[in-house]
Length: 392
Image (tube, rainbow, N blue to C red; front, side):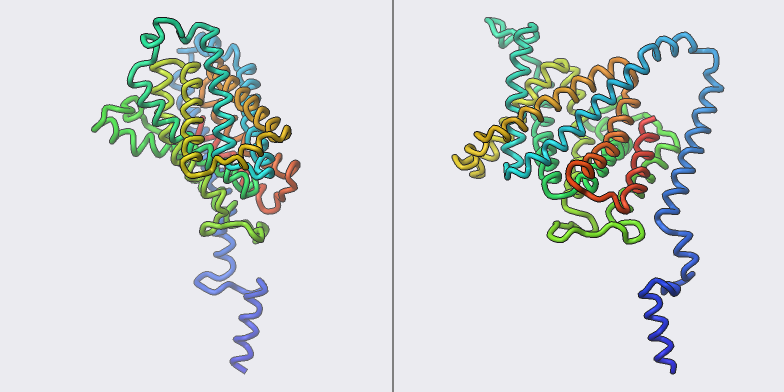
């Protein structure tokens, strides 16, 4: 009798009808579910944000009314341009996923696209007078600090683009793009942990070393981490592992590659800033793209990835059409991003780019590639919420 009762109880637990083993049973597991924790974090973040902004408004009331009016004169237009930037960014990801169906190597497609962009940008710099190709060519070259930052940043950006292309080709967009939310998380971590050390020993990043962060930024980071955890593990068993897909621990391989990219982003953004200060955005974009092209194509050639068979793939009009479309979408993304930065605060642009971009890319994954949103909607919205408040 005793063994029959134990077997029955075990069967009920396996069917989800009985209490789970462990202390507390069913009620505790329901109260402490990941979804409940996410809801509590969202509420705490909203309350903390309201308290901080209310206190700041009380201190600054009447002091900066005129300056705020001037700052927000192009606010709506800036938000619209930032929206164009996120559409361009999402379009690049979708086009890369379509291109992966033609079995084009990640390094080859990134290398060719950046080569086209770099050559076009150099022509534009010569035409506009930013680059002198006459007798003063050597004297017009950027200083040493630019080249150190540009070469380091371009090599790392080549790695980022290659890993991103590989991630989109092997894993659903709705399971990879949301992990780009860890970009601002790593920006936050690098600014708090790495920059003070870099300032002390290298004299680099001292403008960030003494910066403090409000409580709702810390809570926003927890929201993003919680949303990513739900997205990878699934909520209520709704997310199913795809047969044949590669996994690294609990997450798809593509999601792990995006997470690695976010770690790299935390450092490339600082290198980009140094290079832009040394030579300006236009020249950095031109030289940076050519450096990325030489890195990816050179590495592919050295590893035997560039063969006549691979080169012939680019003779397909559809493949070249997609490559050119990627170049155009990426140019729209970058130019819109720069213009949005000129009109509104970068924190708003980043919030729209990452928060809105995650949602838009997931929708594109469903509509264009037949991906499912089962069990992914709440985790994605949690990530979007965390990214938005982290950038405010």
